[in-house]
Image (tube, rainbow, N blue to C red; front, side, top):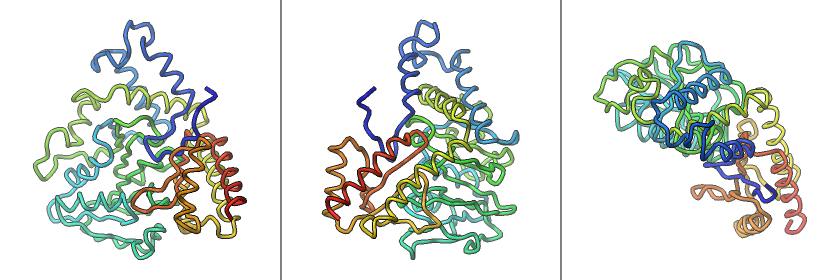
Length: 362
């Protein structure tokens, strides 16, 4: 495949080439079954095997303890913004949130529909260009949970380490950095992530929830929006997104073949350093957006001296085969999303292009 773009899309994003080729090979007929996996019953033994293997791989790669359920859901992380308070908020309790940027703000606005919310810490005064420190967190005793956004895809910030919340369950939206590094799952009561950045194609959302949090919601919650429904039925209550789960299974096998999350983190740190070093060595021509201790290893956001130059950078990069470098419309600037499946060679090519662009326009 000589003609693959340098894909820096923020999501749906790059998938490993080996995974795409394997899916292509199995697409029309899956393992001699006479049909595609997409045509099979989700109740049949073949699909159930794929489904269960995906769960087992996720458990292994994330080190998920036995007292947690792994759920394959639909509706993206955006549906989780509502499911979390609907299922976890009890009378007399408040929903506590860390306001770190665009995605945290969306989660907060959904929670307000279901009960009282409280902001435990906010970096709004710094234009969300940093992650609050653990010492800034003010979590009330009556908090039902503390919610954080592990990585703000739009601003390009990421939690370097997670706070210890004691008896208050920690809820993490890890849509854009799940599996980018090792994780201590037992620090969290609930982790959720849309798959379309690091896990597979769009269409499936992963939730990892501690069993004691899967109770009966205190408010009327539709059957499909209860964690208990999916936990009781191994995520097979209704027809799951079978193809997206199959693709996620292939990606998880690929991560395992890379050597797991520790090996993947090493590569991710190298890729991120290539870009941040290029930015920092440019004498201010490129300017990193996120503050140093909060820089994301998944979404590198940066600016140029003028918006005209930024537009030119996007135009010239597209002509060279780079895709997805324009910043999110809400913040402008530039952004390179370098998820697990973005090869180091693509990042090296981008660093080279940036140096060349500075030479011509600096």
